[in-house]
Length: 339
Ligand SMILES: NC(=O)c1ccc[n+]([C@@H]2O[C@H](COP(=O)([O-])OP(=O)(O)OC[C@H]3O[C@@H](n4cnc5c(N)ncnc54)[C@H](OP(=O)(O)O)[C@@H]3O)[C@@H](O)[C@H]2O)c1
Image (cartoon, rainbow, N blue to C red; front, side):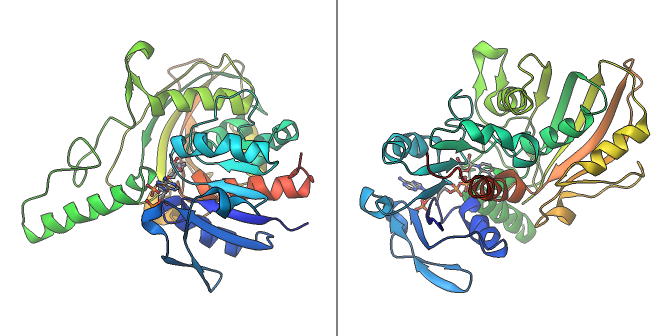
């Protein structure tokens, strides 16, 4: 059965990429409804060369829908989830609302697709920084056990949403014209020509890590089924439009051969390894690509058995829209859409 599909948040940064990726992959669907806030009702968006009118997100607009992708805030996902669940509609949510809910599988299909078997009407996609690192760690742990992970991120502004990209571009233009920069609305300080060691809110009773840093730890543990994995993250926003990059240090619990790590990374679906540690790709080069890249993989000799590497992916594609679409494809393949 081809589902009737709705996208809540179709006008946003993730919604926009969702429409392109779904068309490229020919996501099976009978009909597509594009939903957003009342502000966007009546706007026209394109899907596979076809004009579709955006509607306000209402019960009436969702009544005939089988599968809902939510690319809006956590509050909106929390608002609609019970209503959708009660009516047997499947929700694939891109926000953080349900990522730590034990009844909701948090899934990267090529890592833990089997977790979808236990869904009860909602599946969550991980944070855009968690996904590339979890894919790489999943490959490495096939060779030798993970003992401890530390990571520093270099995150693109599109990870914050469409408003953040506009703000950065306006600041860049003002700098180019030699004009004064308007007071920042999205970030606490100017992002153009700057770097912010601050992504999402600080959490005072979690040692002042940010929510984003805690998401990286908690989501990776859930995806890898490694509830005690020690993992410390520092998340940093950089003035890049698209593409989240990370420097990851992994300490293993047992010896490894680099050739075995190479083989495991090359065998991991969705991952591209650049085996020459002097070769690398940058966010600008991988924007629009569906793969996660691992580069500059080399030993970390500060620990007994360890490596460090540069890892990156397009935050809007594999970090959000593509992963959600792959979850839908997996649900359809396993005939799990209807519970
Ligand atoms: N950006 C990323 O790299 C990324 C990666 C992974 C996950 N996510 C998550 O994906 C979600 C969307 O992020 P984004 O970056 O696309 O944000 P965004 O660009 O700010 O877009 C937000 C979307 O939500 C819609 N919306 C706002 N109020 C609404 C309402 N009351 N009812 C229905 N829709 C409403 C907006 O519609 P209007 O245009 O009408 O306001 C817009 O389409 C967030 O939860 C985010 O954390 C983002």
